[in-house]
Length: 437
Image (cartoon, rainbow, N blue to C red; front, top):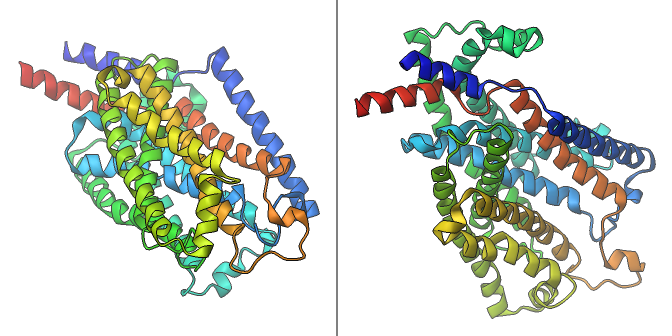
């Protein structure tokens, strides 16, 4: 019976070929990426003048996208490291989903920074002439470290699965089998290899937690180490980390629902998983809401003149619609949905996750843009375009193209590799059967 159950798990979790819907999805993502490439070609050939950025709003949705990607990448450390080290077994079907989201997000966080540069050909100067006193250099260091640690945390637990995939060449195909052989031919599933792999995974899980906290703290310092109203805050590190946990968990809930439907994984990603992740989302949304209240209440109480202009712009002024939309969709509505057991069923949890992700992107936009449009010295004798910022079509195309690129990586990964760990699922199923015997 055990071999039959094992065989069934393997058949259920083997990578599947794209159906018609999958091919349309991939084609749509490639098309969006192509438009983004064309827009970037225009930006390279004509310069940043094609964007809506000017002397005051020198950062726009590129940096908003960067902060968003860095934030959602934290989910790798939350699901893979924190829950693994806590010996929480229910998260096993979600670990690989979380890690591929983390790797794809941090990849495009790095790419979008280069896109934001007016002269990307001078990027090498950061390594030749970078100053350790600069938070930008700190960010480069922690992003690079986090990327490689996340990649290893994705790769090491996948080694036993690669050995399984190589045994099913007739189902996976010769082309994919070459990839599996290249990545995992050395894996023989010996006790020594298993011991070394487990030690390495535990070490990486311990390592990635401070690195993940560092990447979001250092990213917040890019803003908080200035005197600008809206950024001049000692709360920014915790504010960024709590928001990153929230959007990362929301992204996992969305991915859980999509993969569950697309690959018929109802036996492995169950209603119980949505219930537990819904509770996690409520906790994280309440935590982030607390830091939002703290972030705005203190300067509102002091009401210094520069802070007054910034806060009024958010609460009742030019950015009020986006501000209240972000607060409502990222925190208020998801909390109201997920507080109740019926709201933690797959479909409502998916809706709540989508709202969290969408609202969180606009929240990052609000972190970047309003502050830049409220400088210390009044804007005088400048063109009207300098007083406001709205992204050009090139910026929208590149930003949306980067989001499509991250989704494309996740989609192609799910086509090539098992999105749920096969060997870990088999092991946990056997342990559960032995306990019930």
